[in-house]
Length: 116
Image (cartoon, rainbow, N blue to C red; front, side):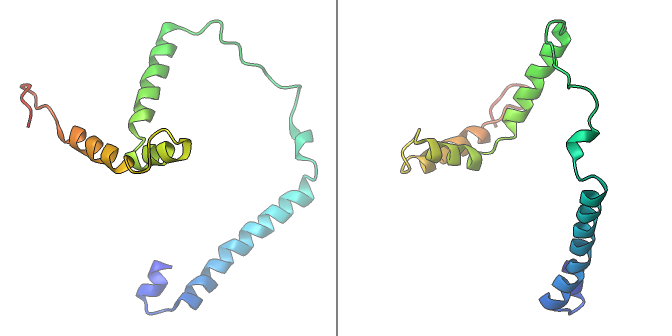
């Protein structure tokens, strides 16, 4: 779409070009439906259950590290939305929390330990 607009094409031309992959996708879905009308019959066996009895200490360390990394990717817009949705924080105080989060992220330590 960006290339078509760059080449002085209009939105009508851009959406016309995007119609091609959309039709190919729908044709693929129709073919899959015709070839496999009951996809649940393709699975073998009754299914597997996961038993967490023999998980090592290394697994739990990796799980904890991955959880902390994932929590670090939650930006404050998502957190603010959660505050508003669950009514945890008053709607008037969410911007205050945002500013506090921005100020606390501005405090960084350099290698020698001084705050910059």
